[in-house]
Length: 363
Image (cartoon, rainbow, N blue to C red; front, side):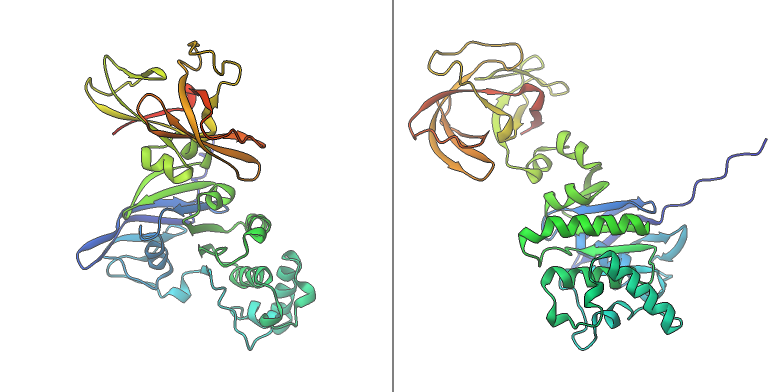
């Protein structure tokens, strides 16, 4: 009986990457791997080390520690280093970097080698797939921003790189164009089977495009996983707040429970006396319309209602955002309500928390 064949190595593997500037660790012990065909997003605020990590993988910056492998083969450590142009890694940046004096076809073909007919066929195939074949002989200045972005994508994919690195590639586009172009880009990347590392500071972009998100902060990866898992099981308060606005209710643990005006909350794993933050997103703060004005009436699912007074209400598109000044401590909590709901300032209402949507973290 034959033994099963070993699984292939990751398309990209990064081991214990470190980069310091003036003694400060900008990239701090970063490790991850990406299989072929997967889109991984390096997500975090500006200055957290995302782009530096990307530059090291591309070969345009040098790490102080760590190793990088492509298909199981070492491409660089602190001594050995394959030049950027020989790493089979494509690059795509936010400024598109198209050559203005070259036509669309010439831009896409720039990194290709081989017979002219073969190159032209590859260019035509890619431009057909990004819906730009009619602009094959046009020049970049004649294209819109979205069209230039698709040309840049076609150029990056033309040499069939094993890995594509994308640094904030959609930030220069009009917001109305982004979602459609992201979807087109994702479809083409999946067709090509390229391993993709996308760097962005926009959670919406990461959630829309990534198979896996690496959440980065102060040079370190603090959480990784599928978008659903990072959103619904954040590792700490800052991780929860990075993906959306949050409300924070202060409490102190007593016998594994945290008493609040909304009732007691379980706080397993936290010692008595520990100060904690109960974090809940605005869409999970419920307004009790049925009980409005009749006083609190605890329920098993939602706990005890707490009274607040409307300070401000705004319609923000598909939903309304209502801010309440809470009676119990004067803090402000924000709730989102579908459609148009604009109660007048000064209106008193009762609020409840979706207990299954609350997170309890050390303060």
